[in-house]
Length: 439
Image 1 (cartoon, rainbow, N blue to C red):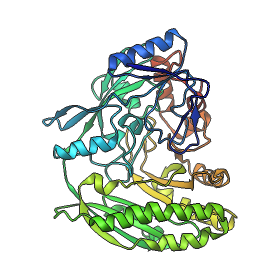
Image 2 (cartoon, one colour):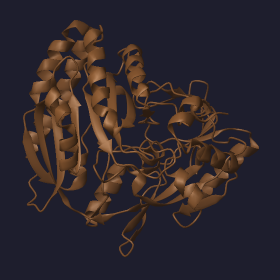
Image 3 (cartoon, rainbow, N blue to C red):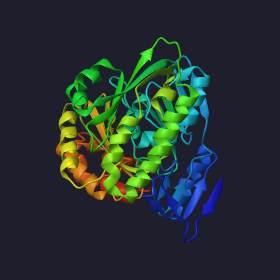
Image 4 (tube, one colour):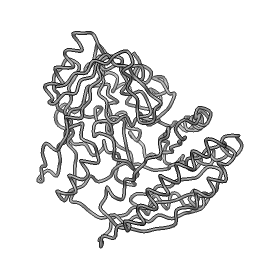
C-alpha cells in the first residue's frame, strides 16, 4: 500500500476544475484489507476518509481534508457467474475496462451512461444513468455490494443479505462506507441499432410520449437559442453489425463533436454575442445517421470538451412543461448558452436515494463550457426544476439541502437512519454530505 503525505500545496482537482481539496494524506491500497486498515488508522488519527474515483463529479461529494483513498489498484473482474448471469468487479475498475472485458466474454450490461471514464464505484455512488424506457441506471443493475464501513469491517449486502443496506447503498453518495466490489447482473452481448437525426424542438415535445413508448432508449439534445434538436433512438437489433465507418466516426465524433465544438465554445466564451449564431450552425452540423454495434459502442461517446453540468430528474409527465419553461427562460434572458441541453428518461426503481426512486423520471441536463460563468443560468434552471419537485443528480452542480431532499425523497429518513447506524461518528462526512444529508 502506498501512502502519500500531501504538502501544503498538495491540491486535488476534479475533471471540470470546479472542485478542489487538500487532504492530509493519500492512500492507494492494493487490497481490501489494506483499505480497511487505512480506515481504522484514519479513525485513530481522528481524520475523515473519502474515496476518489476519476473526479467526474461536479459536486464535492468525494472531497476531503482528511485521508483521500485512491482505488486505482483495486481493479479487475473478480468473478463471472454464467449460471446466475452476474459479474463481480473491484470498485476501482473504470467502466471502460469493465465494458471491454465483458464484451470479450460475450457479455454486456443492459444499459449504461453516455461516458465510461468513471470508476465503477464512483458511477454507482452518484446514481449515474443512461436513458431507458424499461432499463434503469447502472446502480439498478447491481445484485450485490461489498463495502468497508466506518469501523474498518467489511460488509456484504444483496437482496437477501443485509437487505436494508442493499436498499440504500447502491446509491450511497459515499456516506455509508467505501465500496470495494460490485456484483452486476449481465446478459449475453447484443446489438443495438442507433438512429440519430435532427428534429424540430416543438415536434419532439409534441411527440415525446410516443417517442419514449416506441423506443427502448430515446434521448435528445436541444440547442439553446434555436428551435433545433438532435434525437437518438437505440433499439435492439438482430443485426448484422454495421458500425460507423472509421473515417466517419473520427470526423463526426472526434473532429466535429470534440474538436470543432471546442473551438466554437472557445470563440463563444471570448465573444458571447456570437453564441446564438454558433448554436444555429452547431445544431445543423451533424447529419442523420444509422448504425448497428455492440452496446457500449452505441451508448457511450468520447467527451473531451470540458464543462460544468447541472442535471435534475423530474417526474416524466412533467418534462414537456419543464423544457418549455426552460426555453422561455433562455429566450427572454440575456444568457448566452453554447452547450446543448440533454434529455433522457428512466423507469422507476427501488433504491432509496436514486433519482428515479419510486417514480418514472425524465432527466434534463444543462451545461456550460469550463471557465464560463454558469451561476446565473444554473440558478434560473434550478428554479424551474425544483418547481416540478426535481431531484438533482448527486454528482452534478446544485444548491439543494437536507430540508429539500426530505420532501422529494419519501425514503430519505430510511437512508439517514442507516447512516446513523453504519457511520455514527461521521468518518465519511464532508461538507457536501453535511449539506445534503445533515450533520
